[in-house]
Structure formats: structure tokens, C-alpha cells
Image (cartoon, rainbow, N blue to C red; front, top):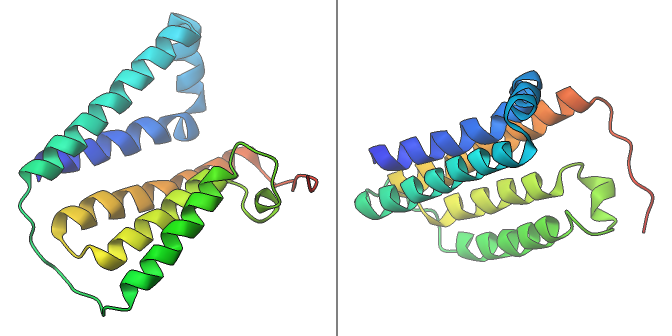
Length: 154
């Protein structure tokens, strides 16, 4: 479980840093250059993913809860919605008029869907952690960037 927790925390910290401390990112990019910064960022994210995978595989399933059978259908629908919302992030879409951050919103919906059908401790750490990260990222980016100007309809 330790590797899984460390991996999720590393993912969260590395992704939140630009929103929490934009001046730190600017000074790192200024000191080492944009490409080396991107390389270090990518290496840290890859490391977090490796820790998550190894942590998941090495953590035994401990059941915390079981929700009613109908939640599988709800989870399936939420995952379909999350894919549509995530897919709209880099394309002109009316979805961006609803969600300022479609990719992060989609990740949050995806995480909730997985928590509905996976009631294990490791699922709670992984999907709960990623869901919390997505929400925190949305709040921090909104705080940093100010009022949202909705894009024109495509």
C-alpha cells in the first residue's frame, strides 16, 4: 500500500506545483530551460505511474464496502460521460461552455464512477486520490486565472 500512496501523492504534488507555486515553475524554466523542465516533469510523472502500478499490484484487496448492483450501470454511464467530457478538452465543443476544465472534470467523474464499483482500500487510495487531485486542480487554476470567460459556440 505504501508504494501506491507514494505514487498517488507524487502525481498530485507534481501536477499541483504549477498551480500552487507558478513562480517556482517560472524560475525552474528560467534556470534550466523549458525542455529540461518538461523532461524532469515527465520523469516525475512516469515515476509516479510506475509507483502506482507496482503499488496496486503489491497491495492485497481489502473490501471496505459493496454498493447495490445497480451502481454498475450508473458507473458505466458516468464513465461514458467522462470520456466525452475528457475528449472535448482539446477540440471546439459546446461542452467547454459548461466546464471550464473538461479534462479535469472528466477525471473527477471517472474517479467517482470507479469508486462506485470498486470498494477496496487500494481503489479508495487510487481513485479517491485522483478525484481529489482533479477537484483541487480545478479550484487552484480557477483561483489563479480569475473569472471564466466562456468560449463562443463552435
